[in-house]
Length: 228
Image (cartoon, rainbow, N blue to C red):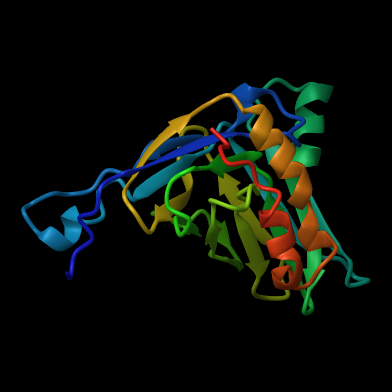
């Protein structure tokens, strides 16, 4: 077999139990439009590729200050958003910048998590958007198996020069692509008790361990039979 024509697997996404933002500020996920002119290679990508759409318009600047400490600040479009303390609080939680190998690294918290009770090897990979929305930095792809790990997906950018970097998100426009290794039937759900409980076993684990492999089996053993 040279093309992946396997059946679709059911995958759900929901708001992270750790989220502090209103549900209406969660990024929207839509199936990416693909051109179909009879090529089986293109057809095999149907139901695998999705766009992550921004729920706001904002320009984020990040980098290192004169003391080599990471910084980030943002300017949002007040045509889309109210100028309120609530909005400021949201962006303060969404935007995270850290130092890595002498460069500033920006993470944007989406507060989206994925869950499935289907195949254990369903993998999600985050890829750059179709149109470049950032300068003086690179989009850092990443992926993981979603069956046994309930974790947030967070677009990540690394500074590439000594100059400050910028990332621009536009309301209703894609700021990242999601790719599954299988065709999926993707839908939004309200989080379940089992998702919330299992999430707590691995929440923020990468802030404590450089390598989670030695302890991940202990976490997997605590997975409920059904998350959905």
